[in-house]
Image (cartoon, rainbow, N blue to C red; front, side, top):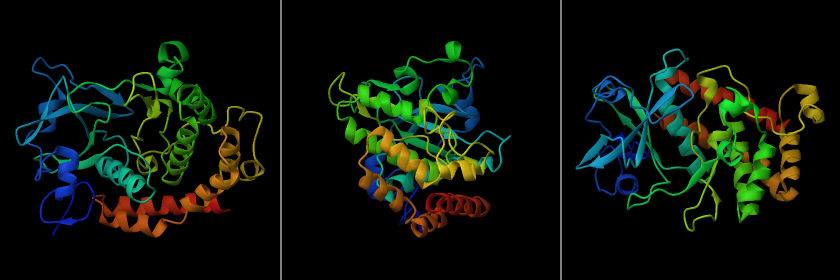
Length: 326
């Protein structure tokens, strides 16, 4: 019996019918790509065909044509992220890492995240696929801005590390309050996503990995679904968080942080207070985030990660649970 390359449930085909319809609008769809990575890595003239670079992973634009997905330089509805960064630990696990992390966010923690799946090249290598939520069925684009754009920040003005050094998560929360109409709902959503990123050791949740968009009415913004969620500690020795929680971190530390040198429940409660989340709701979110370890273990066991990546992922979760329950 196969595992669905989207939801990981048992299925006789690559995708269960529900996921196949949701992702591709078809009852059956193959997880095997009919082109190789070299085919899309460069154009006929030898120039790269990347639509953007996030960290070290290239991204390629795809669209459905006939019964499969094909590369495209226009009107793409999907983004493909292969594992090509050999300088990182367990680099071949990058696609499966992002896939299972996004799935945990959606299925276990009920976060609003982009639809995703795991595909394979003819060589057998995995690639992560996400369906673009900023493209309508008719092909038109939904206005979206990441928080670097919202705050008018760029590498030219703020330096090469601007994605990590220009704003804190508290600063992003203030921008949400200023630009999102239903900001109370959006701030809770943002808080839960930041908390989830901490639990799964995502040290790359920088300012460009959070966005607002206007899916229903132009100029009326919502916090976009979460994207680029993965356990970066499997691949690199990075910081526990990409950004500081607090905008005055140079002068403010909780007692817990002062004693341990990393964030714990007290820090997230202070963060919630500062961004306007009701205390009892914030406390419920913090307490709930650490109660799903067995479900996460089970999903990791069903995932396409290597055994070593599964082991390290489980260990990292337990380390964060200790920090959030101390």
